Picture 1 (tube, rainbow, N blue to C red):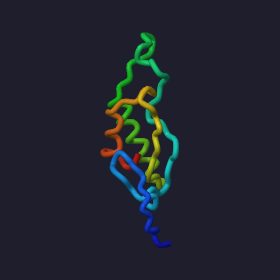
Picture 2: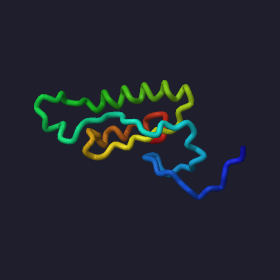
Picture 3: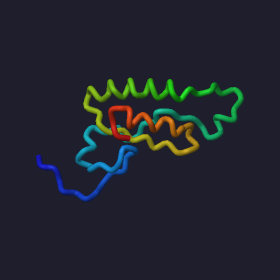
Amino acid sequence: MAKSESTVKINTVLGPISPDDMGVTLPHEHICSGYPGWNLDEFSPALDFKTIADNAVAKIEKAKAYGLKTMVDPASMDFATDPALHRISPAGPVST
């Protein structure tokens, strides 16, 4: 099947890609999540984002062996996300 000549691009943290290049896609995955204000809860454990990122890359690598090429993480800014987690894409195996 020939690739389409679509001008539509999907924005990823790695840059724009063609829909034809998305391949097998997980459309709604959260690498890390928590309720808004979780970091103000004195009883919540501290999150180690480096460990979370390392674990995520290892698990995504396993999924890649089954054909995973793109993953969508629709986490909002107040959903226990951290800019450090975006390093998973450049260092990792899939577009997000």
